[in-house]
Length: 398
Image (cartoon, rainbow, N blue to C red):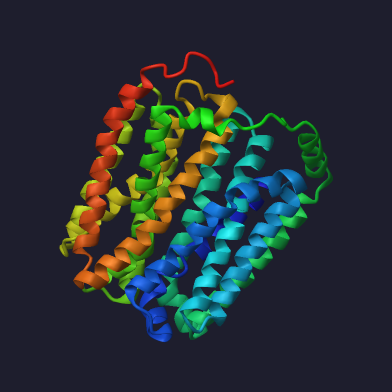
């Protein structure tokens, strides 16, 4: 039940995070905004995510996962609700930014709970299962929006209200699950034995390998978030209808679910950099193939994008926490740094693609930009491999 509750919270995260992508033409028309403005809206929650990541973690440690995770999902529900009431650019911008307040609580809370309740191989399986939550939420959003939900509900505003209701029910479900005596006692014990040692962020930031991983994380999220938000619109420019684009845009997500359960397991320390290099090249080839209208080429591009999107982040985090001087002792701090840096790219990606479309009238320049970033990630992997093979600090950070 605990795993199902955590999975449901993360599914609500994914459902709301991807809800705007298939609705771009409708929202732009109703709010009278450009692609550039829409890109800034879709990238807005990553901006607040960066600002609230650390406070969200503090809240999680202070009040526990029962109240914190419930609060996070309730904030996500409020974000969806306010989107339905939005009637101009600024009201929609605020509604989406609010998602970035609740999102980091859910993102940080889920791994924390799984680490506490699952051990050994069960922990790895649980992590893989919960990671499918946002992906499945995204599949539902992309595939059912135009084919089922909009004909049934009548407007995109009503769809936002439905998403808010789903998130509200999930918040209540989690609170009930987390209120069980066994979970409350375990959480109280964890809080009473927390390590109060200061986090020495500066010591990590001095390491060239860490610096390079953080720069790569910006590129990974710029590619991922850029394509996640604009993929249905990119496919529509090749002649697809809204319904067709929704189904096709779900292909990378479905492939990503399978990839997230297999590729990270194959990325052992001995072949991790080769896999990371291959994923970077896969992302580059995907952005090239998506510029063609031939169904076979587009399908190949979507499959490659799904493989890269699902595993680039995971393998890069694994690489980071196993760098010399980090290990288990500083893995939490290193992961926090990773997401704080990565979400900068999460903000830049949607805005850059929308801006380049408005300037050029198509997505060719935008996809070419993502191709260059992906090639840069592949080349950076070669440098990272050399840095990781050198012990950059002789002793653990003081």
